[in-house]
Length: 393
Image 1 (cartoon, rainbow, N blue to C red):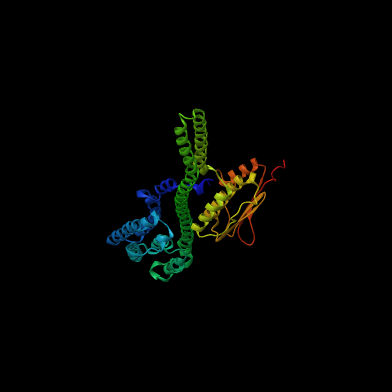
Image 2: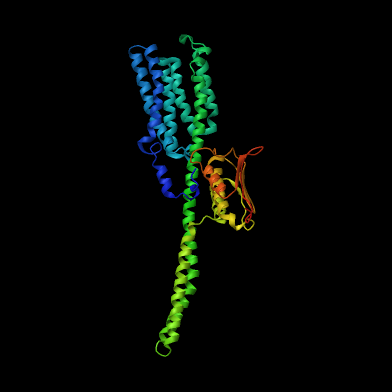
């Protein structure tokens, strides 16, 4: 993960919004690929139906494919919690389409028989993507129907064992779990992107206020002094030439010093500070719905360690929001150590190429420190960085 994730701005989010699998026609690529599995239903229609019955079965299957693409498109574009709990016209369109697909599945049963239950896999995807955990009764019902319905229809000459061998009763819950996990991951990514955008906006606004305040404090007194001294030099120009030259020399020195102060004030936003990262991290955790227990003072940390600990806090809190699924997070500071503990499921693997934690290990190692990262009992993850006290080789 990029160590600058917390600083990512709206430009990064706009690039994510343009990814082909979530925007435009590209978002239908994956749903189109899934339709390949309906060939099994088409083959079953050809095996069990003849003449007009076969044509009717193929027409129903084609209508199901078209309806599936229409209903899945909005879910593929924005699989967020807001969409899953959507209301109004969008919600009505979804449920109308969902009902039509269910009806098409029932209509296909006489023509494709037990193979038609493959269509339930597609209905399962829609159900889980829309309802999340609340879809569990529907998923169980579809899996049981795929297992037992073929056996209770005498003309199909099927048994429960044969239905189980067809894999569909197993595929339905497996697909449901996979979709649920994927939607949760995408929801987390969207939430993190929104939090980044909000933090970028807040950071820009705070930076404008800081620069305005600093410039006012720096320039107000300095420009007043310059004005007074320049006016005095003008009045002394003829009466006391030496004094006038001295006053103008002081004006020049003051102007140069003020210019250096302004440059410092404007460039300070590039620095990574422990206090700044704790303030930003508090806003990030709040935006992500994680209860934050962060110190408000950093005086306990040795000055030589504060910049590095700022990087640690930035990376650690970003990992908590992105990977941990935590409800609370705490940061503990000591003179030569910093510890971040959450109650989630864990962080990103440190060995992943390009991982922010891997980069953090390199940064800490260069400073002569040690990174400890691992699970804690009964639940959670701990990231601890320890450095030698300043002045000790």
